[in-house]
Amino acid sequence: MAAEPASKPGSDSFSSAVNDGRTVEECQDMIQRSLRIAPMVKFLKEHLEKSGCAIGDNFIKAFHCDKKISGGYVRGAGIMVCSNHMNIQDEVNQVVIHELIHAYDDCRAANLNWANCAHHACSEIRAGHLSGDCHYKRELLRGYMKIRGHEQDCVRRRVMKSVIANPFCSETAAKDAMEAVWDVCYNDTKPFDRVP
Image (cartoon, rainbow, N blue to C red; front, side):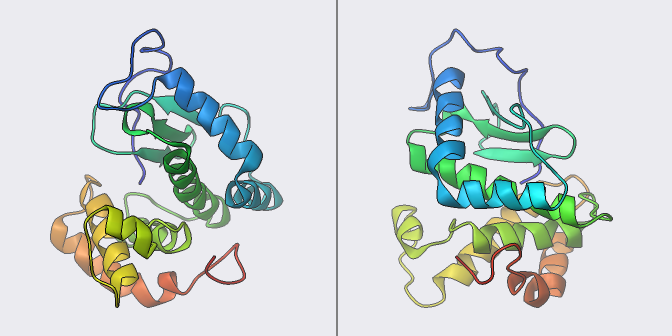
């Protein structure tokens, strides 16, 4: 999800986490752990660098977010992880992986326009499909019990939620864009050889 930070970095550096979340400092430590030990994070970071888009130390930052989102990618600013919506390391890893796929797409596509509903939908399809966001165990924990076809349903649901949040995309435009690019984007597994 491409998003704007809800508050300035460090603005809640002294406060406690809310909603069972983590403080910005705790989340920042979890981000550093993701960068050190999560194989998919390391793989994506390496491929971003190979594509000419090295990420610096401050590329992935923890924020306290006012919106009910887990994180976002903003061209030129990097990745934010919403500390107050994170509880465990796996959640941080998932957000970082998902957003690194957006950063990779932004890096490799010189003409990617986040205001274009089809471009945004394509990156969301790829991030949802390749990140593991829609693994059946995650879906069961969210209360979705469908066994067959759950993964594509989940990706579609999450793409729609994200693209509708784009101020340039109505619900109809988001749905039309997603359907138009689905096959190409769902089957594009770069930088992976196949779906991880």
